[in-house]
Amino acid sequence: MIINDTLLILGGDTNTTDYEFELFYLDLSKKFDNYNLTWTLIENKGLPVYVHRSTSVLSLDNSTVYLIGGLMQNRKTKEYDYSNLVYTYDYPTSKWSAPVLDGDAKARQNIKGVIDDSGNIYIFGGFNATNLTSFSGEMFNDMNVLNTVSNTWTTLSIFKNLPLPCSEYTANILPNGTIIYIGGLEQVGAFFTLVDMKKIKLFDTHKHEWSQMNATGEEIDSRIYFSSVLTPDGHIIIFGGISYSGGDVYIVSVSPKLATLDTNKNPFIWSIPYNSEINAPPSIYGHTADLYYDYMIITFGSELDLNTFSSQEYFYNIKNNKWVTTFIPLINETPTQTPTQTPTPTPSATPTPKYFKWLAIGFGIGLGAPLLISCVTIIIVRRIRGSSVIETVVDL
Image (tube, rainbow, N blue to C red; front, side, top):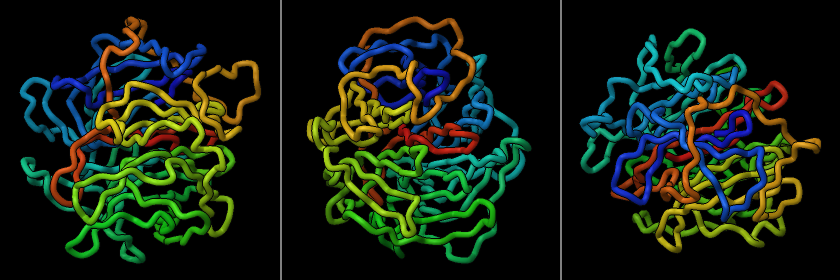
C-alpha cells in the first residue's frame, strides 16, 4: 500500500512457522535497486489478528485502512476468531480499532474490495470456509457494500444478469464508477473452473447493474492469485498468477506473465507488450503490485519454479514498457501519476536488515477443491485526479 511516498506492508506468510503481525514500509523517496532494499519496521503497531485471505481498502481521505474478512486467528490463542470481521488502521496515529457496524457483515475469504467516490466499499462474491479443517465451504455471487460514512453493511438485492459464484478475481474501479472483475475461480454447478480472461464482469455502481463484456485481442491464460494495476490512461496491467491442471491441485505457470487490457476501447482489448518478457521476474503468484509514478512495483510473493518465497521487488516502467532493476524517484519530473499525500508513519520506527524475513504476500498451499490457497487479500486503492482507482491486489 503506497501512502505518502512509502510502500506499507501489512502481515503475510513468511518462511518461518511463526505467526506474523508486523507492519513495515519502504521509503520510495530514495533511489534503490531490487537487490538492495532497506525496510523500516513500525514497532509495536502490528495487526490485531493473524489473518489470511482478506481484503483491505484505503479510505477516501487516505487516512484509514479497512481490513475486511478472511480467516482470522486470535493473537493470543491462535484459534479462529470472527468476533470482528472488520478492523481499521488509522495511519496518522498508527492505531488499530474494531468499528461498530450496523447490518449483517458476512464471513468471506478470497475477496477483493474497491471504494467509490461516495465512500462505499464494494465486495463481490468470495468463498466462506465452513470447515476449518478441510477448508471446504461455499462460494458466493452476491454484492455487499460497506458504507464508510455511516458504518453500515448492505447486501444489494440484484436478480438480473447475476454472474456465477466467483472468488480470487482482480477488481478495478474506473473513474465512471464501473467495477471491472477479471479472472479468478468460478463455480459452475457442482464444479469449479478458471474464468476465461476475455469474459469480463462489469458492475455499474450507480445503477447497481451487472453486465458482461467479451474482450478481444491476444489470448491470455486463465489465472488466480495474480495482480492488477489501473493506469491513469485507462489500461489495466495484470501480472503473474497461477493456473492449475485438470481440476487438480497441481499448479502451473501462466502465459503471458504480463498483459494489458485497454478499457478505452469497446469492447476492451487485451495486448502483450512486445518487450515485457525481457528481464522479467520469474513466475510469481500471491504477490503485490503497486503503481507509483511510472513504476509498477512487484513485491514478495512465491516463486513457482523454485517453490520458495520471494524476498525481492521488481520494477516495471509503464511508460517504456520495460523491466528495470533500479528505482529512481521522479521527484523533478512530471509524473504519469501523482502519488497519494497523507501523513507520515508514526516516528517510532527503526530500520530492519535487508532481508529480515522472507515474506510471501498471499503464499499458500492448494488443498481440495476448489483449489483453496491459504492467504489474505488486500486491495490497494489510490486516488487519481479525484477518481477512485484500484491499483493493487495484495495477498497477505
